[in-house]
Length: 304
Image (cartoon, rainbow, N blue to C red; front, side, top):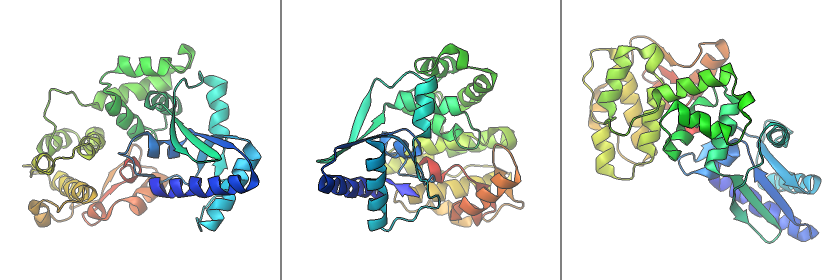
């Protein structure tokens, strides 16, 4: 798992190596690692690859691999540095107009595209199990609240012909769960939605997570994590797991009421599809606060 600090250390070490060789290098991040720097809500990524434009490519790749070896970073994939995303960006999309510098050394500079550009890339990919949470997070960051706004954001980067039926349906599903500013969205409100239709409305959990992670006020966080009144033991277990996990993420003591909530009477898998692969991933990656209550979800850790 690559986090903000690890990536910075990697770039610093690569800068030193390039400096010793007298080479000036540039990296433009486009993959999941770009999200670590695009906004602070995602502190790490479960992906272990770096998708980027690199120049000069061979020299920068060699410096990064040498830096990773010196830092004793262990990558599952030997080809963990890829330019594949860059190729399809320039094959299908308009080049990014805005790049933000996130690291600048004496011999290496690293950039990321604007948040709106990353949103369009994620809509283009439109993978149910990987991109839905990211698009939700980016849309909320940009204040986007409608299907039309999502389509417009996509259209600024990709030709209209690429907005096919699959991507339209993906956008429609995202827009359906985007929160409206005028509604108070606390844990009891989330519980009500889950009681109505757990199979279809579990994605509101992702919206709630994004909301809490942007809040700094301890008082407001505890207010939003108040105990919900629900007679569904599955929903109660989900809410307690969520409150405990979010409090921990914010460096707070979990609300006292969560200690009284035991496991769900049945295993609950909060997944877009219940395939064997996704079920196994959720079983392994679900935070402890969820697993101990028989709740399994794979989307949370990659979003923060």
